[in-house]
Amino acid sequence: MIRIRGLRKRLGAKQVLDGVDLDVPTGETVVVLGRSGTGKSVLLKHIIGLMTPDEGSIEVDEKEIVGASEHDLNEVRKRFGMLFQGAALFDSMTVGDNVGLSLREHLRLEEAEIRRRVAERLDWVGLPGVEGMKPASLSGGMRKRVGLARAVAMDPQYILYDEPTTGLDPILAASISELIRSLQRRLGVTSIVVTHDMAAAFKVADRMAMLDGGRIVYSGTPDEVRNTGDPMLRQFIEGSSEGPVHAV
Amino acid sequence: MHEDFALRGARYVRRRVFDWVAGVGRVTILLRDIARFLAPGLRSFGLVVRQMDAIGVGSLWLVVVVSVFTGAVAAVQAAYQFSTVVPLKYIGSVILRSVIIELGPVLTALIVGGRVGSSIAAELGTMKVTEQIDALRAMAINPVRYLVVPRVAAALVMMPVLTIFANAIAVFGGFVVSITSIGVSPHTYVTSLKDFFYLKDLVSGLLKSVIFGGIIGTMGCFHGFQTEGGAEGVGVATTHAVVSACVLVLISDYVLANVLFRFIFAS
Image 1 (spheres, rainbow over the protein chains, first blue to last red):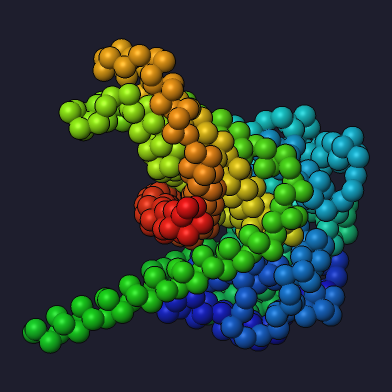
Image 2 (cartoon, one colour):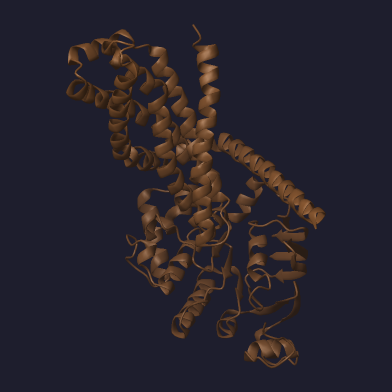
């Protein structure tokens, strides 16, 4: 379980996170919704220790990670997989080396076993046989899939998804959402998905939370969100320019 | 009006001084991390070898071309300056000593600083702005161990190797010009080389090249890691890497010249 309390972070003049409280129960998928620039990605980077908060607490399985040493953070990180917004594949490596990197770095496995696992993970994401390709020759959707294969390479307990469907056409976005769902069923992982794609959010969420003004302003099940009377959330779900939130 | 201008000027100077001090602090932290992760970083021997290939083999042809002309120019200049003052039979020794003490290490460092410093900063800068370095950290892989140590170690090893090549080729370039257009016989040139070759000259030049390699590798990595923004940020980081490496090479050359020739090899 991930438990976040009173998380605050200021970047320059902007208070990006202003007291975030969020619980992510074991085995569930929590989708964090919010407009662009509300700090969703910043929140994810705090959870995996890539950023340090000004204040607040983040517990992963009851172990505090704020203020933990780099060594302790790395032990926590080994239990996480993360899909970055732009996939963040290593350009200088092949797809196979990207997916197999953490296996080679952290596990003492035979090369044949690493290759088997890499092939298996690529098969899971629907890209069998692309081990030898370079990231530059992949389409946006393929890059996300390879990023996902890399994120699940170490059989993580937790997966963080940063805008997994952004920049993809609706069909590809739907296939990525289905992929996320199938990986959750296959691995039984706890997931946090950051997105503003409502179709994807409803497809993968067990719970949904809305981040606005640096705080979680709403939390509920997908059904509760669908039927909410909250005017801001309704405006967000319907993608309307009319409502309490004004497009800048 | 004048007070306002002066105040803004003072604030600008103060900010630049603070930025500079902060930069020195960040470089110091990077050096500490390089020392800390040196042993585990070197265990990834394949990564070091790949960087040695990129830095050393990749720079070789450029070093060859520059060194040939360095030796050739040194021969022409020496002949012109000797004129009636010094016999031309000493031309080989002048070229040899100026090349192995100064021209070989420094020019090689400036060439490699431009080529390799920019390439390291651009690669790591692009990795930074595309979240690849965050991805490494998220995978519990320390970026200093995985990215910086192999590059700095490869630069430390390959700079003296390139300098040895540069020295040999420059002396050869001087030989060709001396015998073809200055009128010195091959035997005279070679005898002059042998008579005035001192091992301490070669050792001091190679010691300098090791330090220059460390500077080039560290500056490339440091500015790559400091990259902010997108393509413009990568461009700025690349420029800073090359400029800082070249300036530091020249400053350290002066310091090392004093240390080596006034204290260590004074006799």
